[in-house]
Amino acid sequence: MDIFITPFLANEFMIRALLAGFLVSIASAVVGTFMVLRGLAFIGDALAHGVLPGIAVSILWGFPGILGAAIGAVVMIGGISLITQHSRLTSDTAIGLLFVGMLALGVVIVSRGTSFTGDLVRVLFGEILGISRQALIIQASASLFVIVTSMLCVRPFLLLCFSPEQAEVAGFSVRIYHNIMLLLIALAIVVSFQTVGTLLVFGMLLAPASAAALVARRIGSMMILSASLGTLSVYLGLLLSYHFDLAAAAAIVVVATLVFFVVLAIQNIRSDGLSVRRSRIPHDHSLEEG
Amino acid sequence: MITRLKRADKPSNASIDRNNQVHADHLDIGYEGVPVVRDLELNLGPKQALAVVGINGSGKSTLLKTVVGLLRPVSGTIAILGKPPGALPKRIAYLSQFHASGFVLPLRAADVVRMGRFTALGLVGRITQRDHDLVADAMKRMQIEHLAEAPLRSLSGGQMQRVYLAQVLCRQADLLVLDEPTAGLDVAGKNLFEQIMRAELDRGASLITATHDIQEAMVCDQVMLLARRVVAIGPPEKVLTSEALMETFGMVLNLKSKELCLAVLERECGHDCINPAENP
Image (cartoon, rainbow over the protein chains, first blue to last red):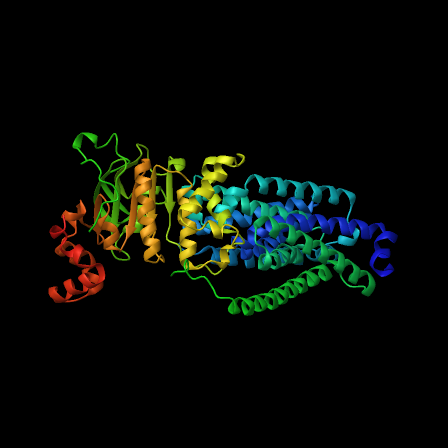
């Protein structure tokens, strides 16, 4: 049992890492659920990478990285809606364009500075093993804010996932609630970049929520399952990183992705079993039409 | 034998405007300022049903979307329950055309029906016993109460359409705007739909339904034939003439011979619809 518990009991930095990962998992589960159900994975990916120039500039000029990341996210969301409103291009074109443009801008800014190399690795891959108390508090407040806002907006969010037209006719403005959803995704990304990094935060948003979407029957259970799978990935990832000296954040996301495939396999085996059983039972077709 | 959904009082000119659920005047409808149908006139009174009939692309959905406020009118005026479209979400229920989506939400049938109460409940209003009763009642009326706990992804197309209709019913709206509500329903489902719409009109609601089904249109108080213009509007026995139907459906049949065209119409829609005068 020691190899599972001792690394955390013996090292305070491991406890902090676990706590930070747990907070990232909760925020990512709530936001990731709506992101997956509403089909916003691409914009989430773009946001996760598009915040890079903001962070780079903030490091260059010496203000908090989280502020630069927030500015980067706002520029991305504003740019995407600007392009889609003023042209006939679809949003995935606008997202792709800004995604690659912002990423390139980030690299250009980084290439100007000589002191960047260490910082850049930290920005891209996080510093979950060296996380400060202050960063933990910010992470906790942001997670709380994401949860409270999502719960307040759960009805319009559900309608948006179901049918944007129905949401609009039901009196919930699609434009307002879509933008709130985007801002929550952006917030989850911005506060998580310190722990798991910009490249990997997207994995935490997407992998646990996708795995949960495969099996969950209700939105609430999808969020809880997603948070549980995320937390499990954090724990196993940290453990692997400790024992095999791996990059912690990357190990967490690799585990999260593997967990997705395990759930996919289990679900397929189970549904094959179910369909075999169903085919043996005479089926009531009285209500099946079309 | 065809019975109307509701034998409404003849609309008198005095009742137009003030009491009308839907009133449109010189209305041009379309997308992004480009009109699809021009110069629509429409008056729909309380407890009245209007069928909008036409082939795909004729402007049916465009009209329905304009009525519920999803599209702005290109020009002209339209008032819904005395207000601009979209101003009274609590009193209007809309069923859009659903297309098979690649991903089905992790929801149970009852969760989808319950969404019909969200407008009345607002963001944080607590779900009361009355809301639970309305949801249960709507599912019972659509004969899907046994599917309440079933995941949405396990339902057939027809069952899903019944779930969506139950969602519309539990909104308790004054105006129901339904885009092809019987798509995917079998004969039993269509009969049930007709029965329920009759009850909704008795309750005091008005109804606008888009359809290509002539039989469905014949039980409404008014029929509007659309073919990117208003071919005809009025009571079904006056509007559903063979000439008007040919003009409405002619382009899809794409047949030169009038006799052949009528034969196809008769086969598709039944004898009643092309000779409605014989069956008063």
